[in-house]
Image (tube, rainbow, N blue to C red):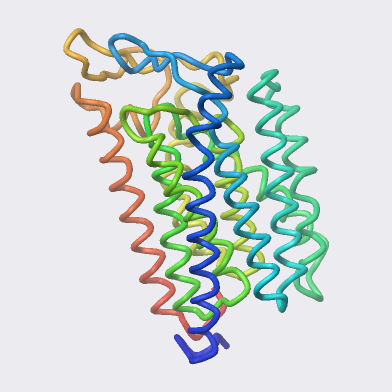
Length: 324
């Protein structure tokens, strides 16, 4: 049964967790300007193809998210040693997934290579699987990391869409875990939320930096970690529904494609985006029923994420005395 909501003991832990989230926010916020400059100097950049002038923007900015998350988690481990082992495993998995993202950003892995490496990165989660579970459940854990990381990596390409959706998902998971009294995973959601919100300041329209795979992959991996450690798999599934819809639309319209084969959304002379008449379908292109600005498209996709995030919170409240 879940711990009583906001018991005095839990309130103390929430204070500690909030401090960790603030530290993650400040760390990412303060490191990003320097990181952006370093990435630009190293020519780790890309064109923002959804702008008329196609400006050059720094890539792999998700390193800042990873750095802020790491510092926040180290502080959590220091301040609250009770769930130390799960937090260490969480940090290990997120760092490994982030490394896969870095490699993919730099040399472009094939789909099979990335899937294999993400599966390997998710293996440490097996060490904190609940007792007396079957082998199928254990094998599903790294597979879930692989799937979720790819889901949050696929719904991307517009300023702030990935980090914004990630922040929405983490907000939903944070509030859901508080409602359910999930001491062990509340801090994970809060710390990732802090890092994502700080990154969003630089990633929102007009973006100064893109997250790269190092930023997008760790969002999905973090959601899975929270789902399995906190036993909130249904809520995690719900917050991922926008990403699931996007992947299904792409798969049914074009099958399995390498990322470099994706034809980009077009931009008109008026600066508004529009979906090409041919090519694959996606959640973004489904929103683009008529030409509209990039900001409006992103806000509409965020709104979809908020609706499912709210549904997750409602589910947590309804079933707060059950394991979901």
